[in-house]
Length: 431
Image (cartoon, rainbow, N blue to C red; front, side):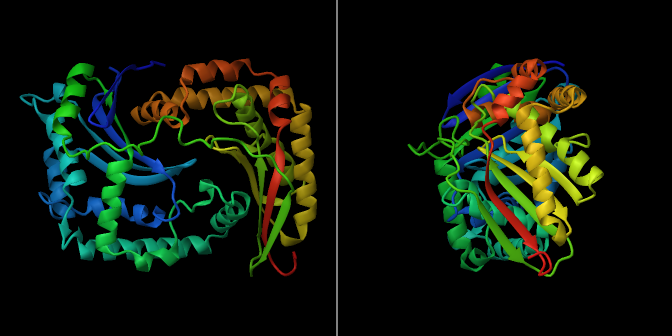
């Protein structure tokens, strides 16, 4: 495993991070625009990747943009939005060949950055708004996706659990937007929202590959000229995390009825622990022991031993104070399943789980971190995690911590788990 050399710079509102590594023949550029998650803007921002990908002033169609990518030696372009903890992030990613391996080519990196500057800061517009046809098409795509997600009962249960558990928190905002907001979005309003995003977002630019750090930083600062003037609203490091953890005043149970054969049981726990805390890695290992793989406590008992669940698992959110247990069960098995889940959480907290499960889990997590550093995307993601969390933890730091974690460490970390909200989507029979 090779850790890339890193060089950072801040200029013109850009936080530039050059990750020098000779392990790759391609170069990856990622721009990340980070703002606080907001119910009022999430639906608009979900539309932006598709609208931006449809064309710019210089490349007015998706086909013209693709032709330019082909001319850039088959460079690839991805735009997507995501939600991480309290943050919304618009990501632009381009991967392209290293010009060192192309005969008589000296300007490829500059041309790629110029292409990014063009479609980000000179999008196709008309009458003070984005292109009307493009916006209409993207709104219809989003409408269909959100309608389909309502038919996905597992996704619906996830959303409803967070509606109730994270009430009043940014974390409760639906990451893909809201059906009821789509019709209110005009092409003018969407362009205005985009301009606000550009002028208020924290902008991090990552360049990873076999590059010269100083030349690369200068290139970014010289060619990426469309970045708007600064704002006092731009986020500091660590903004993705909540400012404090929450305790549980009273646990609640939410039941909903639907015409379904397989009930969806989702249970949310408060962890009282954040990524910045010293026992977070022990909590990660504990969550995996509880429900992170096929030898976990939940999988072995709920699914294999008692045959109660079609699927079962536990998911710890790295950017909040929440752990979610989820399973699909027969409606009549609700009470029995909850009883067994409670027993497994108690076993985790008591530290009476098998030794081989502990060691296998630690090896699994270490392996996943090591594997992440074998790809450019993984390297960028681990570097960006430092910014989102406001920590200096490196993957190697975390690997060493994972390897040293004991049964007692897991007991201490998981002793703070408190059940907050139980959501069950079930049939009349199960109610």
